[in-house]
Structure formats: C-alpha cells, structure tokens
Length: 386
Image (cartoon, rainbow, N blue to C red):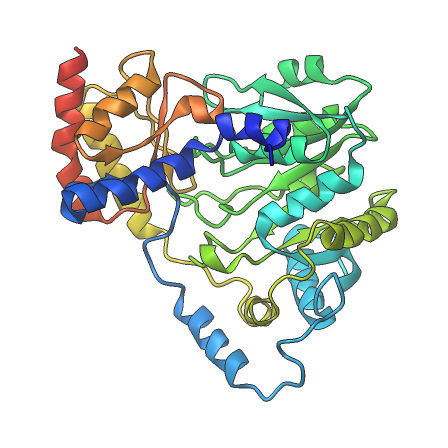
C-alpha cells in the first residue's frame, strides 16, 4: 500500500531533533556511550521535583473510585478548577474550570486549537527559527504555513509580521522562552504583537519553558498582554516529566468566541484520538501545579558551554531561557558542520531544521562533565574548517 503523498513529503523534512537522537543511539552502540556527546534532544537529565514524586505516590495510594477510568473529555473538573485558580492568580484573568482543557502536552493543546479554527488553506504564521513540528501540525489540519523571519536577536519583527497578515490569516504561534534560540519576549514585544492581532487571528502561546529562565528573569504573562491569545502549556520540561505527556489549553473567557472555541477544542480532542489527558497525571499536577526543577544547574552548564565556545571563536550568545544554546556554525553549511561534529561523537541539531540555516542547536540536558569532555571536539572541528 503506498504512503500518502503528504506524509511522504513530511518524512523528507522530518524533525532533525529526532533524527539526531536516533543517530546517537546507533553511535553509542558502535563507539560506546563514553565517546558520544548527545546535545540533540531536550530530554531533561534530572528527576522530577520531590513535590511531584510525593504527589504521585499520594495519588497512586488513594482509594479513589475510578481513578483510572474515563472522565469528562476536557479533564477532571476539580483538576481544571485548580489550574484555573492558579492561572487567575497569575494573570489577573477570571479563569474558571470551564476555560481549561487538560491535554496530552502542549502539542495536544496546539493541535486541537488548529483543528478547531482552520479551514483548508487558512494561514498560520510561524516565526523562524521555530520548533519544526509546528509546520506539520498546521499541515495536518489543511492549513498553510507562512514563515516570517525574526530579527537579529531572534525576537518577533512586527513590520514583517504585519506584512505577512492576509485575510486568510487565522493564527500566529509564539514560543517564549523560545526553542531553539532561548530568546524571551519582553512586555514591549508582546504589546507590539497585540497591536497587530485582530479578529479572527488568534495567538497560540506555546509556553513549556516558561519556568526555565536564567539570570533572575521573569517572563511577562502573554495572556495578560495579548488579548486574543490562548495558552498551550506542558509540564514536560518544568517538571522533567517529558514522557508523561501532560499539559493544558487555557482559553480566556473574554474572547468573544470563547464558548464556541471550548466546545470545538473538546470535540477535536476526541476526533484526533487524544481522548483524555492521562488520569493519574492530571491528579498529580493538580496537587503540585507550580513545582519546578531547579534551573541553576542548567544556567551553570549554559555558562560553561557558551563561554568555552566563545573562547574558541564561535559566536554563541547566552540564551535567556529554555534548555538550548543556538550558536552560529563557523561555515554557512550547517549540515556539513554537523557532520564534522558527528565525527567527533558530538550530536547537534542543524539550524536549518528550525528554519534558520548557518546555526546549530545544542541542548543543555547533558551532564556537566560530558559538556567538559566534548569541548576538545568542538575546538578540533573549528580548527579543521578554518
């Protein structure tokens, strides 16, 4: 049976993140784990906070009727109420349980919104460089991707976005702290975006890295600044539970179409096959919604890597948040440079996989000692291309 043309085309441009991760598995078999330095995937190298493990133990130990059964499609009402209360306190928006849908991570949240708002050919603006799977999400729901370049600091370029908006524009996806660049959008940037967004355009704010910021920064609340925005949230990174796939979608009640959008997204969860967010983890995150891993070790690793690369001669700005460093490759062909690093056992993701060639993404979810041991390889490759 032939593979669908759409999937065949997507496979050709499949996520370099996963591709490099799979290459890493093979290299470890061939060379031994000690000779491979895997900077490819944002898979936290720490365990969840103690409060999360304690909450998990309590939830599992409870004699709660049907704790493993179906619940309303949008999630347990008490869980959604707890999340809504936390959001209301944080944003100043009068969220209630009805405004929150528990989802299979932020990816699930984004997909149900796109399924609910896109007609064939409707446009979604993506800000390059960006998480590569956004493109697949849009295409999965018959949408058309409009790519807009960010500025030299990887911040949204309001003029370019304004020029990209057409009568078919339905959504703009923003991601701060950003994957892959680590850029954090300040309040001025968000206010500028708010000035552009008019009905029917909806901003989808993807925020899995929100708690993971450095140097004492505190990201502004997108929902409190961009009036026509919804929040896609995941605890995957904040709690180091990437494999549990738990998150939520928050739809502010002040949106004119809020009730219709809630109903559509709840229905879309079922028709896309997500059904319900996992029952146990809904209860866990409701018990400890604000528990977060310690970002200090990641900041130490950020400083080690960026300082070392700069000393060698790389252009490697310090990210403001997320798990990633996004340096320039010393040669324009980032794929070729990634190949040279691979010869040294170093796995990085080419910037072209995120829509910005001439860069590479390095994940900080790798032990400090491994970063130290990898530095000689980075330096050897730099000398080779020079």
